[in-house]
Image 1 (cartoon, rainbow, N blue to C red):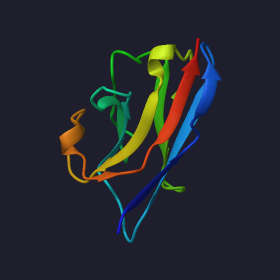
Image 2: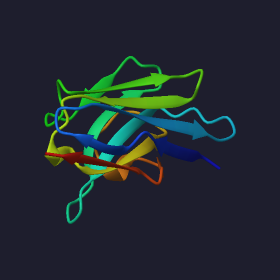
Image 3: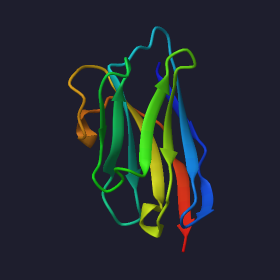
Image 4: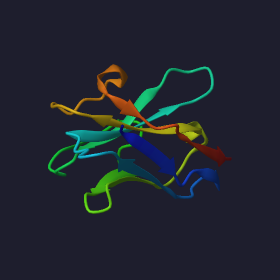
Length: 124
């Protein structure tokens, strides 16, 4: 059984920073890629960023490019989302997801496992 557990969310002022973490566990769990998605109230879940487990490919949504960065630590089985220059429109629940096979994509329905999410609230 694969488990993804997010942490690091919270309340932050606009312009501030947060780092989200996602720890992956499960017997012999080696995904092809890991992604971060977010969902604001009343809106559809949207792609934020993704990275291959090897780290050789990353993709980032235009809405967060230059402000957010995804990275991974294979030793710790952890994926991070560093979020800088946060804006009120970044307020959402952030989810970690795992994709078992290539290619690396930004589509919600192409990811196989999901965490429960962590709430990020940016006050203006």
